[in-house]
Image 1 (cartoon, rainbow, N blue to C red):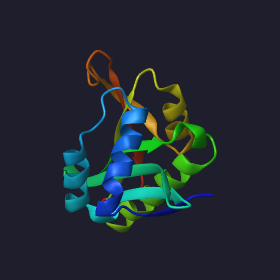
Image 2 (image 1 turned 90 degrees about the vertical axis):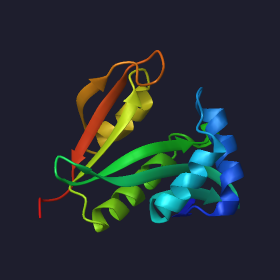
Image 3 (image 1 turned 135 degrees about the vertical axis):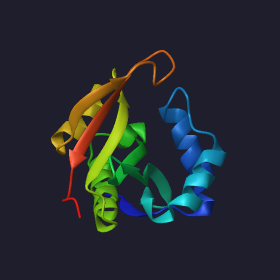
Image 4 (image 1 turned 180 degrees about the horizontal axis):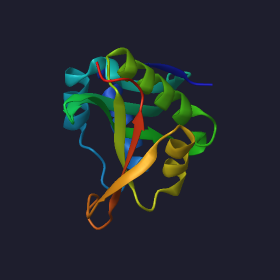
Length: 151
């Protein structure tokens, strides 16, 4: 099983290559660097024998007047999918967001990405809306999960 740990600057190249293999419209390397600077404890990698096999990126926003966690990106190497890596990354990211006082976690997911939707539904997320053309030619579903109480 992979070890979940915070991302480091020298991981960025491997993360970006994984991103390019995973998504048709990958984030540029500069976006990963920015997220590492903005929220280092919320940028996680799954590493196995010094290989990056997955990553998750989150941030905290104010939404509806309360702290909300945003799962911005989550990817797992194709050969490692359905082996618990995505689950482990999501659980660790959620724990870190909750420790920072968020009461809601949300994300966007491609309407066609049924495997990701299944992961999120299994973990207590609900579909709460649609963002037309969020992914250049494909709608995005907004999914949310309540994780705390308003303080």
